[in-house]
Length: 461
Image (cartoon, rainbow, N blue to C red; front, side, top):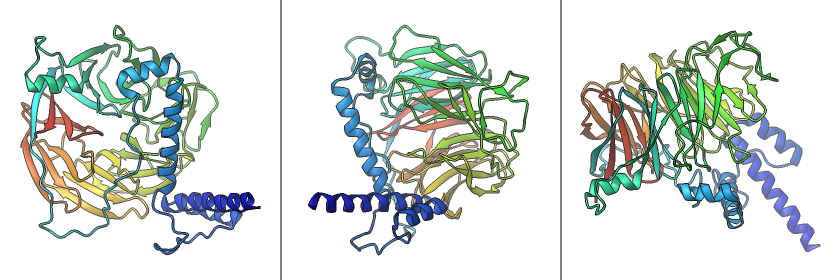
């Protein structure tokens, strides 16, 4: 009898977690359906009540469970697990959605935090402009992509050793691999969340997969050719059973972002192109999934990014709008039309708790938006963005917003809560820096420039 009672209590708790998760992520219809079917209260209980569910509690519990599962699998894992561990993915990544900053706090002016001092070092040059950079999920590596079609792969520990200048084995070489396989400039990069795989997208209309656990590999082990379908512009198409034969290639594959995997390699890739709707591609079944709800979107996509759990994704468009999509149904759940007036939106990322989106546009404004309401929460001004796909990112704790200034060739930092400018650092680039990427694991970031250089920044002691 006691076991039955405990099981019933556990079932109620699980139902409450599911309803709270759907409700807090603006999936109100789904929350109402589950609540009605399970007789679970839909309205959130009092914060101090016995039945209250903390924000993102379901995500935290799932993250903990997956961490334990990965740890148990690692104890008896096969050859691929060993390769992943050797590449730096053996340890547990930080839990998703934890230690998130509460941006609803109304901080007064004068309470801004001081940005710690950073030192920078030139670490490499490409033969053409450096167009993008990306850190691995554990922060141990990063890669840069160039207009010269090459991808350079860096080890952060070697860069730090080089910056100390105390190597007893001669000059330190932070570039541990260079990949040559694309035929056109690189547009975007991403890492597999668990395995030692780097993914790239380029103007040659291909997505390529590189295994960086193999020291001699310079070519991709898998390639996806991206095509335009006969039914362009894809209106009312949700699923394509198999890709049709190509008629015209996509003009440009602007951005990719990898999230989910169900095998030792990659399962799904979400990518944006000159087409107004992001594409989810299952490379195991060769199936392309498209949203039937474009929400009057007719402009090319500059960037697409998933939230930390994959339940949402955001597209940043050339028409100045942001659109937030359900990660499962691919429905547009929150269009923010004219987010940057008519200026292009060049970047968009979610906060860790998935409640806000940070966007950057060619109107020289960085803006923080509430996902649930589409309300503008904060603006970060004082940096000029008019020419390049400038990025605005959070530091690893989300206490600061970091971006670049094209006009003055500076790295600009704001307190994330007060929106006050707290630092302006000379970038060291000749001309404007065009990309900035921050480490997810420590106070370190990388800048890339039109001067073909890659510079690494880290906090000084």
